[in-house]
Length: 287
Image (cartoon, rainbow, N blue to C red; front, side):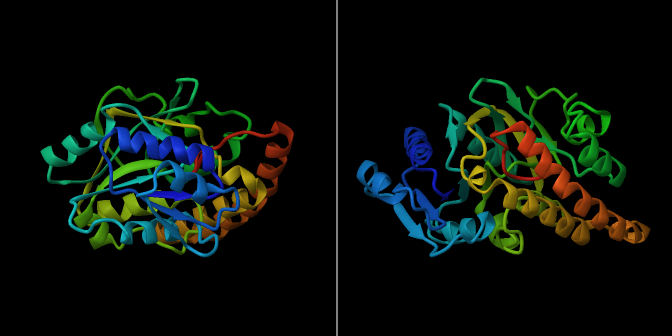
């Protein structure tokens, strides 16, 4: 299942990689693209089920509709961004993880940028101090200690391990887990829906696993970069929504301060984006 929004050329490569891995039940959920994605994909792969959502529903809502159109008898559901490509043998490695471990609900691959560098797609749920430090220092000092802990930058990404959450850019989930969790929470328009899904999976007793034997190349941000400033605002809204859901005890007293911090950080992130010029930023979570 692939969620698409104006990513035509990348979508064609994504679906071709799925076919090369033996995936023939492919559903594309399209959020009202205007770049000819549907025409191009139908010409290249006429048997792909192309579902038009009717408007830009956001990632999670479109993914839920795409998942509903897949073959319900299959035991697993693969969720992908349109600008991600599976490397040969990757699907087999993901499936083997779920087949060998009944306690794992979802598994994510190693994600690399087109230049071959690692994108740290396996992360922690950061403590409040790490979240604040990452949020403000990460804009100008990417390798600060808070960001390093949150992004697990000092961890060996060549080793398979259970983690707290994995990027929604590509993951394989057990269908029973997907259905029990109700898919993505559609109150997240964009960002943090993957963090939330993994958090709910953990609370329901499922393990979340990172499997580096599976590799995906992700261009990053092909769809979100079309509306970068709105996406930055949505990113911050999603962070606060997740914090509201997951913060417990006396830490909830700090939520108003967090809200103020996110309001302050949003225009700073806009300015950082403006000064940096066009760039790619992988969807999902706090980058």
